[in-house]
Length: 473
Image (tube, rainbow, N blue to C red):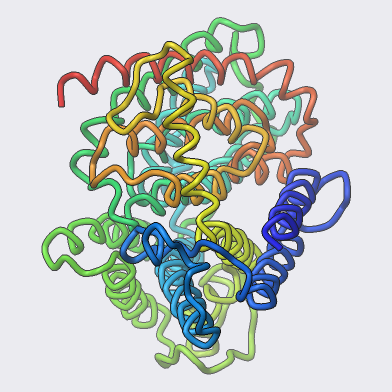
């Protein structure tokens, strides 16, 4: 039965990787393999020899293992407890992401991101490149790399009409956004997973990864600034005029971003899970949104009118909170649910734990520097390279079940960097890349030829700097 579960997982993995070829949204195979894997566990519960207790982080039954237990009801009870445990941990991540996405949509409801566009006055291609690279690096650390990419490409489309020029900027935005997301606990889904899973803390994450991530962004941008597409000035757009800004737009932008940044502070002060702080931040932002829109406060009522921004909607006829909740990326939430719970199935059977034991035995033969616990730098870098081909969410989810290093161990920080920035090497390797691919119809092989080598240089430079930095901590 274990072989069948592994086969289902591998097939589901392939379907996710080949999403664009199969023309099937990746959330479908993710949800299917989650349900099938757990169904197979329930059917074969009597025959399994091992069960991994994720709460205690140990195999149940000691040397005798799970197979030594003869009471089937007791085994089913352990399985139900394990399923509930993993669902709870997954729900923490999903509720956190829902809150963050809703705040960003509320900002967009008030057209708050037009404030950022107003900062860009230059027509120099090189200066615009640096402005967008730094904006992507900073914004992705605050509102996550996926959302930052959407916002910046949307702004880019209003500044540059020539798509052939725009896609070059989009490629560098992907690199910068993924680099920026790596050093922030709320900047990338994988980093958020490590943070919520008590593997990294905010202070140490910044200390370990800010400089490597910064150089991972700066070096490719510096090299790109000498390439032909970024020479000269952008053509003046005929009839271009500044987008009308709502009077509450800047206020909601600064309030929303401050509310998201407040979440790590809340966690440090209260020691409560991050999603609690995110819900508090959402409630504060929602209160101001309802006040500014002059509409009746209601999280549940369905507004009669639909609109893109507040200025398009008559006062009192639409709840900005309801509108924002209807705009969040629910397919991404369901995909994370499916993939995290599918990986949890492998973890519960002790398969990831066994694979970690194999790594500890095999990696000393590679001749690379070893982290405490037997994991080599080469393995972590391979994980980063793998995240360019395979979605980095399940890779990091698997690492959570494979390794037992304590909070803020250097291994977790290196995994956060490798998984976060390694995905830039292929356009399908990160959420930021996939959304940019969709918004600008970027060709896979164009990106591979023009941008991937820049991302690889940034990844190698950042990894090297991290190896130097960790000796200081």
